[in-house]
Image (cartoon, rainbow, N blue to C red):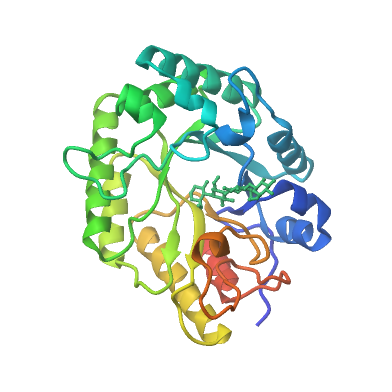
Length: 329
Ligand code: G3I
C-alpha cells in the first residue's frame, strides 16, 4: 500500500544526504522534503572533506546542506568530529600528544564554533570501540588514540561542550545487534567506556546506534534491549543514526528480500524501543539510488542492493512503512 507522506512523525525521521545530487535531482530533493525532519551530511564535515591541509578549512559542502535545511525548516546534525577514518594524509605527520591535542581542539573550536546555534547535535566521537575489543585494547586505533589514548574521547566531548554549551553531544557506534560473541564484546566494551565517562562527569547526552544491519543475521533482540536499558539507566538518550540493511548475502527475489529487510529494521527498532524510545531515527541515505552499500557489499548475482526506505526510483518500500509506523507511535 501507499505510505503516507506525513512529513511529520512523533519521533523525527531523517536521512544522510549527498548534497550535490540532492540539489540537482528533483525527485531526490522532493523525497527529502516529503519525508525528513532532520538531515545529516553523508560527508562534508569529515576531516578529509574539511581539512585538505593543516591550515585550511573548506566549509562549502556543509554550508550548502545547512542552507537547504534552514530554508526548509529541517534540523541538521553534525557528523563527525573525531573518527579514525576519512582522514587526510597530513594528519599522519602529527608526532606528539601535545600536537594531537592542539589539532583536535583547534578543529573542534573552529567547526563547532562556526555552526554554533545552527548545528545543535554532534556525533562528537564516531566508532570509538575496536572491531574485536579486548580487555587490553578496547578502543579502536586512530591517530587520536595513538597519541592520546582513550583520553581523546573525553577531550573531544569537553571541548565541544565548551565551544557550544547547548550542543547535544553524541557518541556514535555500530555492530551491537548481532547474536554473536563479537557484538557481545562490543556492547561490554562500549558500556565500560560510557560508565567511565559518566563517572568522570564528562558531558555526554546521547548514544547514536548506527544500525548498519546485516540482512542475513537475525537481531539479538534481548541483547539489544538490555544494552539500551543499561545506557538509559545512565541518563542517556538514544538515537538511531545510520540505519540501513546490508543485503548482499540475502538470497531471493526483490519482493522477498524487501520483506526481510523491513523485518530486520522492525526488530532492531522494536528492541531499542522496548527499553527507550529513540529521540530520532535517521537512515544512511534515503533512496537505493544513493547508498554506500554496493561499494562495499555488492551482490554476486548482479542485482542492485536495496538497503534504504525508497527504491532507486524514489518509491517507498516496506522499510519506509516500518520506519513511519515506528516513528508515528
Ligand atoms: O567525492 C569523491 C568523488 O569526487 C570521487 O569521484 C569518488 C571516486 O571514488 O570518490 C568520492 O569520495 C567518496 C565519498 O564517500 C563521497 O561519496 C570516497 O571515495 C568514499 O571513501 C566516501 O565513502 C564514505 C565513507 O563513509 C567514508 O567517508 C561513504 O560515502 C559514507 O557512506 C560512509 O559513511 C560511514 C559513516 O561516516 C560512519 N559509519 C559507517 C558509514 C558507512 O561506511
